[in-house]
Image (cartoon, rainbow, N blue to C red; front, side, top):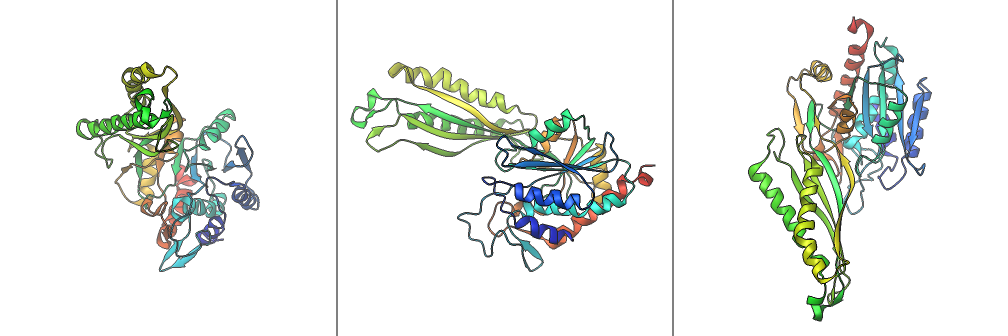
Length: 386
């Protein structure tokens, strides 16, 4: 099978994060078994999703992980020109959900399995395909814990998020938290007797806005990123039951996209301190049972790999590009790095196409990914290592 034929099969599996990815994982496991490669599945708690781990080459420490996620974002409400779960070729581009983010990389990695097996590898190549990356990188931590318990110690990792085959050595981290403001309900004609949860939520949200704008002005800054500072963002708010009722509850989400040098927990703590010191005393002066809770629901560490790291040097030799970059979007790379694995990001396709209707990857990018994998196999061969 070619990479495009594999991609056609992968796109055909509807692996939106709200659904199971097991049909795709089973197909990949069978594909590997037919090539004499055993794989291990690490399921979620309910058994409805799974990560896949497989090793090609010698059973020894070191080697490189090729990491990709199998889930995709939803398509509902998007004006697609063709079936998002049927790979469609038009004008040198392959359209379908996940083509760029990031089943294109999974396809070229799987297509390279025969090449890796035919090479006398000096170091192993590991395949790591995860679930639920798009909803907070929920799957990869369980996979990393499983390989840690097995004593597997890879030396490096290539996360194949779409970078147009450019070397990326830095990414922002992300922390998401749920905020719940518990007010005191009453008739709106008696508003001073109540505690308006929506209005107090608005005050917290305004504090978050001010904190972001302060960071725009004062930093810290890392000019590799755009924007160059950590940002805080509120993306969803819900509260209240009727226009003539002082609302008892309001919920909203806080997203912190942080520079690798920033601690997102300290930033969230500053929001919590504002709630505890300024807002809750006012609220409880009216109704003692009111309050504010902030709960972390997901996080993904930032990435700050040394551009001179061995894995970065390997990628530069293969691509012939001596530049390296940093990106503002989050990936699973921070988790691999936090686990002590030297990690970079490099994959086919453009992040500009991700999450959009009519998502596509250029055929030329798939071809570039194939050439990359062939060169990687050659670089890992015993003759190359000698």
